[in-house]
Amino acid sequence: MPDTTANDRTRPDRLPEWAALGEHRAKLGETHLRDLFSADPERGGRYTLQVGDLHLDYSKHLATDETLRLLGDLAAAADVEGLRDAMFRGERINVTEDRAVLHTALRAPRDAVVEADGENVVPEVHEVLDKMSDFAERVRSGAWQGYFGGSITHVVNIGIGGSDLGPAMAYEALRPFAEPGDDGEHGIEVRFVSNVDGADMHETLRDLDPATTLFIVASKTFTTVETITNATSARAWLLSGTDGDVSAVARHFVAVSTNAEKVAEFGIDTENMFGFWDWVGGRYSLDSAIGLSLMVAIGPERFREMLEGFRLVDDHFRTAPIEANAPMLMGLLGIWYGAFHGAQSHAVLPYSQYLARFPDYLQQLDMESNGKSVDRAGRPVTYPTGPVVWGTPGTNGQHAYFQLLHQGTKLVPADLIGFARPVAGMSPELLAQHDLLMANMFAQGQALAFGKTGEEAAAEGVPPEQVPHRTFAGDRPTTTILASELTPSVLGQLIALYEHKVFVQGAVWNIDSFDQWGVELGKVLAKRIEPALTEGADVPGLDSSTAALVSRYRALNG
Ligand code: F6P
Image (tube, rainbow, N blue to C red; front, side, top):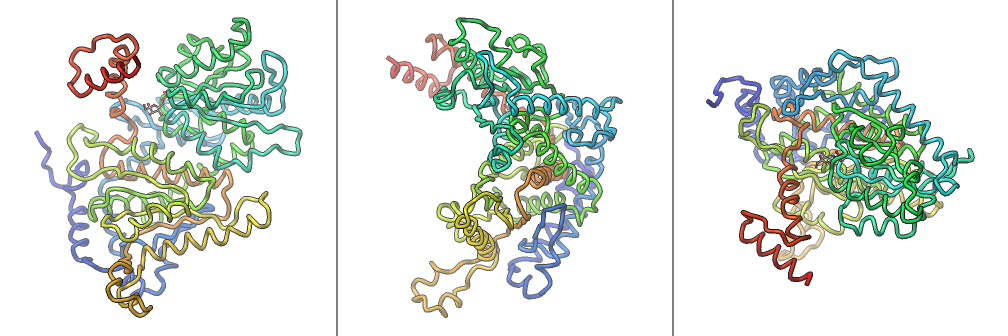
């Protein structure tokens, strides 16, 4: 029976607070950002927040004080704070998998107490961090010797999804911190193989020497077919030079997993395994042992600085009131656009080449978490949930899809992320380009918000027939996130900000943000189809389109 209880906090769109937002939206009507700014000269300074090193400007949103108050009321009515506290307390808020959600414990200080099922998990977390640090130091210093003698120069992380995107993104982001130091440690280059397309491994190993290569097989379950297939191929590549002596595996393979049994079955000594726990979701696992490749690259100290950055935003999220709480505001504004402005997507536009993979990382974080259409009780939702998340670094996007952002028919709220200073180490000429980069970021936020009216275009001498083409409606919302520099701590702060934003949205929508059943069907079907490709086996019950594609594939293969 459908639940028709009024004020049911599990049905956000039946709350009076939701209805109030609908009425408010109608009242705001066509109120333009230009009107909001001219009515309040202080707006640009007032609608800002400082969280750690992150300065957030949310003034360019289609929102008034009243909007923010009503959104805050919705969060209160949906009891987002209650669910947040339950998460931090280690309650099993991942209902469909009956698991706690405790990635925040991964960055808790050594003396903290965080309980899962009545046990303090912090000592174990630090035990693994210490083991990772010891290993990373040995690899970095050259003390870890390969089977053929000699130290490691290249680490290849084999993993996919959360076991790839986090470390791959963070390695790119923190590349300047991976340079060899003056302390005698040599720089280790890290590469990432994720795709089961053999081309990925082929290109990665092409110029590598097995003697100086170490593989980290990263898989929470250690059953993911892509990862196990790639790891098996990598093992064959290594053993092709050892006359079949499998003892080389112990010197060139380590594992990161929650599944010791499967790791041992694969042939990796569990002494060389770095564990984590089922209360860490794959897409929330960068700061667990899944970050081992990153730690090898940047060193344990920088890795711990990153964890401190995460923790700083955790503390803010846990304690700041809704109206001054950055993840709450970002999450609520996303709900505002999805439900009351019809926005379907959300762009993340870092004005930093180092953050090139940040949108990819956020795609899994956000879309695997909130791409759901039933609520926590399994009832179909009657309101839009997670947006399509996408983006690339500025300024490149400006010469590609920004046309649509400025003049298209779709509303795409966007986050602009930039830094006051480039990371040191570039030539003076390249350092000087930074002002130009940031001028572009500020200009885009301004153009999206305020546009250019037909009158303004005409006054500039635009011929009348061209005025419609050269008019910019504006009123396109952005959040600007500005920090002084992209350090490990700042990266941790940024990631935690988005993790908690996703949490807030899932809490209001009353969906389980921590499961991912939607990825299962394709995996099962691929397993059924594969024998038809490799052995020509019959797959009973194939639809006519897929059956024809399978036959054509086989025919093309002779
Ligand atoms: O298929 C989706 C998924 O389960 C993700 O949630 C996860 O990050 C990824 O696969 C990899 O899983 P594992 O770390 O267990 O190999």
